Length: 142
Ligand SMILES: [Fe+2]
Image 1: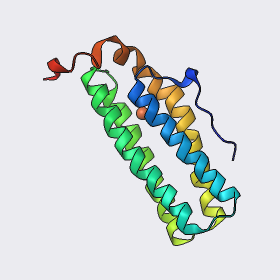
Image 2: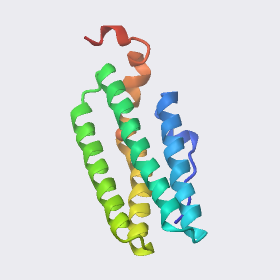
Image 3: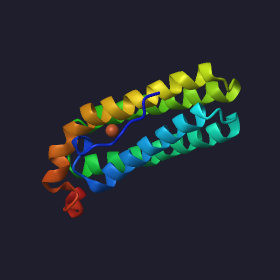
């Protein structure tokens, strides 16, 4: 797998979310290192679990900020997150049942794809809303 490098062009304008994206990319690259190094299934599974868990945490933060910033397409974005999460868990499950390269490669391809196309496509759409006032004015969220 080609390793991903986070660049300024991937910034969504909110440092906390950029850091999450960087962390997710680092985990995915780490997964690739382990797979390339012929590492056994247990350590690969640990990274996969970390990825799933961190993705869940990150989606929650992102969804909270989208709501605070009154991003109008929040619901659609949340549905995309739910779909990504569901697919990640199913890839994880497949690898758990049969920890072979043929079950790892599709997971890596899926993650690599969502981390780049989702950030550059979907996440960028909320950028103008979040950088406007959202993160500074959470008091009028009610
Ligand atoms: Fe997102």
